[in-house]
Image 1 (cartoon, rainbow, N blue to C red):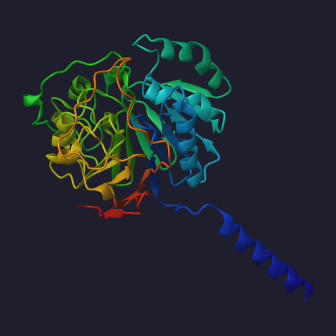
Image 2 (cartoon, rainbow, N blue to C red; image 1 turned 90 degrees about the horizontal axis):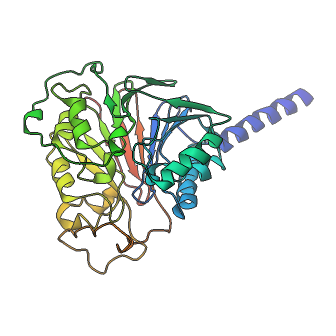
Image 3 (cartoon, rainbow, N blue to C red; image 1 turned 60 degrees about the vertical axis):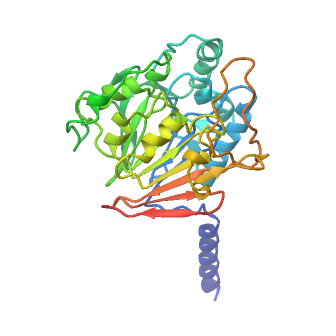
Length: 370
């Protein structure tokens, strides 16, 4: 009788422990595209539960907000640490929340492209004073194009870093790119082209995140031959800004889905929207925010948009608005300091993947092999 009672208690405790454990499929690659107000924060969680975070959002007063939003995704994924953190480049909307985040959770490896190439007080002070303290008791890695980032169950390859691109095509890639002939170079700042860009393979599923890589570097990456090949999902898109997202890259990698980490008045520019919606094989564009720079003319249906405004307009403008000139006199972007929602991507090894808008629960599954 006593043994039976002990056996019952053991089984009961096991059931309770399983019920309290984080609910997460063990056979999917999960990607959280986190709302950091036009910055970037993208969390990848492998089936092994190993994690890779790309960027940490904005600096200044926004840093605690953005680090908090990242932590919400971290907790949803059931993580106890961040195994790898890539800072794509040294702009405040990409590294700004790092110190705040590091005070909340252990980060085991800090990855970047090396020194800042666009001198500025914010980045320079961070790199000289704060950053060395953050990685002092962790691993610090400066990656170059062609390196691999070791995450169990995934093949993660650095395809751009420090202004360099891979010279050999990825497996299955390397065909001539027909869009190269019509490419037109454009100007950019010094730091965006330094972005760390990665290509991720999980079974038959493929995705790519290129940070804020600009058009001229996109050309170097995929011309005259496309060294990337095709992908299922294109992530980031430099917030949807026209200094990136050229046809030579977007159309060549032939994404079925794009997920744009934009802000209310940052990205979603008409030129980019035209490139995306004319991309062969694109099924859907998902956005973190409705963009006033798109208006109704270039936006997607609301079910594909994760976040709205705290104080929405009484009528949605049809025509896109022009972005105000940057500088001290520029008006602040529309506020969104309330509840922030992420877009979640869950991919299976056979190439099937599902994208979910957590604001409204809308979900769509994309079958493999189409």
